[in-house]
Length: 407
Image (cartoon, rainbow, N blue to C red; front, side, top):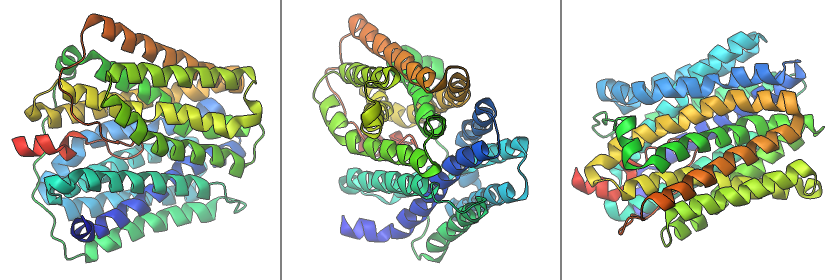
């Protein structure tokens, strides 16, 4: 394990710096947009550029790596990410910012795909789960640090945009100077979405619904805090709490889903999240806002990984890698919807409206999960659930030992 970590230290350090920059940029744009007088709807459409770009990047990045290799692809995409951060220093036009979010959305997920495929190719099966856990911790830590940094007051925000660009550029250094050779790579196929929907309806619908909620957390939550009158640091702290809670609950919820019907876990976690959001909306939990947000996010953020595991339970090892790419697309479709709907609801209904949106989508997830329980029995054999971050890449199949053995 130590030897495997030593071989991949450059990759872990590079992805940590990327996640710090990503968390910083996403949160900073919302806070800075509010200070510039952008409406909630404008901010929502601007931020929707990221998942739109991610839909394109998830398709293009594997082909780019297959054509020119990991290191060149990483360098090219990181350079474009750095450009997207710098452009925010040159203009305050929301249209330009939205276009840069599309560029960032194209590049960041591509960088995660490169990192994960690299890690997968280098990891032995006996170390694979441990390395994936380290990778997930790095993603959660980086995103939390970045969100916290967005709360620092530098007056105009220019210094933070500059720091974001620097972090992206520096992330290249440990990878480029490492003597660890990049592996060979071939772009994975994707399982057609309608075919996967027939195999595992909950995996597709759950991923889309969870994407809406993920967008509500990572895009609308800072807006929610600012609307309540919190400072920039206070609004950013809500996102930090949500990110850390998601990381904290990933493993116990995954452990539970390995022992009982995963659909029950999805329904239970979504139900707790709905009740918590309802408590926030009603004002009953106003005095414990950070604790309530942490509980809600802790229940919602692990659901995607449970949906992936539920799909894997019903797939052959050869289908796991193609299905993982399809589920990434489903998640990003949900994030794209949530990026626009969340701020719009916040604009019309205020903080209460946003929490009621969480209640509605969470209850819909409960309904879908329970409906599927009534329609079919749980698989007799299940594969261990893996912690998968909704912030970073989600190439779960590529990091699955059984998929590797099949290949």
